[in-house]
Length: 383
Image (cartoon, rainbow, N blue to C red; front, side, top):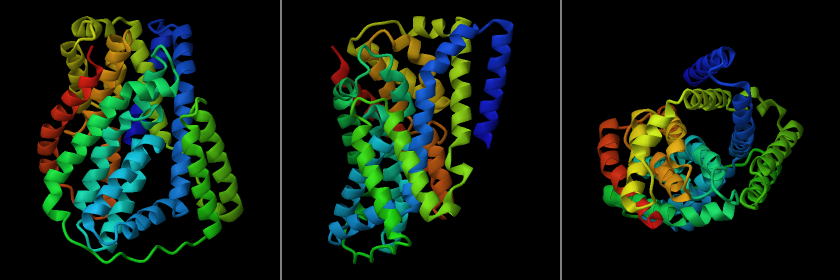
């Protein structure tokens, strides 16, 4: 609700700016043409993830991982790491935070394991693993169209080194933090009961088919929308009561729309030129660290999406600088709870599950992790 109110406020202010001539209508139209595919993708992939979760796809997958681990806690944790990376890469960081977090907590509890190591694994990897693909993060979808080639393969090649380092350092720090709690063995719990096996298999097949199509070169909103329509039709046939307008993330869409237009107003007013001048130019390591550091700092002070929008003009002239900015705003938001929407959603799900988050520990470990992850992940980008 708060996100929706903020979004409505930003949209209202942007309409006033257009009416007063601060934001020309043509520029507003250009912004709309740029962001509508992004918003359609976010809405569609959220619907797909929500309906797949209700069909039991995530529950069964996590339970199968527990069986695959053969009762070894550290192996189960590593498999959860892999699942979190894949979920974030293909279904976005918000899906990992909202849908995967309660699943891994339930699996941990069912097998008599501590919940916090698995919960912190999902939230840290939701942020740092969001560097992998264009569809992993809203910021990536915006950045990829600023690059010389909008081909997903070009994005993956550019971000492969930073993503691998960010994920590797994250996993290493999580292991150091929770090593003593990830030892030992457990007796794997039975697989969860499927209320509707037909719904489960169609949902699992739809998600499996959609994932490679997201990086096939098609506009990501196309396979995501087709998958959403398929699952909506199947649910209309098998479980119509589960269909509700709340499946669509209206608050997030309003918030993002308001931010896009507000950034356009700021750019039209010349406010973002100050940021561009401050960050300078150049693809050397010091310059890239400056861009990434500014992104991480702005994200932790405010939020990663407005941080990206504010700093994009200072980085859009170079793929390496744009990639460094993504490292900062994607992998850097590990310190403050509000640094990324995924962290806020993750916290809300933990509270719903009755898991208390020691925020002091979250911030202290984030102060260690964020600078280390960002600084090292930028190294492959330097010329």
